[in-house]
Image (tube, rainbow, N blue to C red; front, top):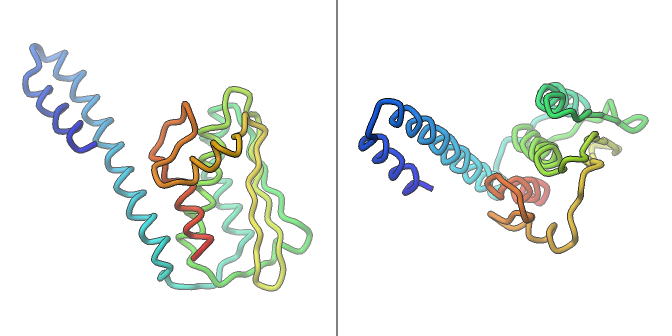
Length: 180
């Protein structure tokens, strides 16, 4: 990816006109953002794998509500409804967890559902269940879904289902957080 950004920067320098330079500069900016996102995700994956973050008391319900609030504008823009459903008694669940990494894992799961659900996607649901300091989070959607082979590929570092865009690190990050 860095070589691509460098090539685009060189293309801006050699643009035959100011219009061409502006167009190439916009492509360069887009590519630089993608490389930055990739670097951020790689650092997040390494942090998740290290399992060394500070454990603090976290309201599982508050974490889910904050995530839904953050993701709703994006979902609505795509015509998708976000739904959060805590099980009876789960709304008061307090965990000792790395709050940043847990939020990252849940964000990646909801983001993947929104990003890869396909044209028929109309709803993404986050569910919380658990007891006595143990939480079970699940994300479900009514999108196109993945075959078992596609799911296995999507869980690999840089793995993606056919036709998907992104870094291929969202599910590996979520899995590393859960394992940690």
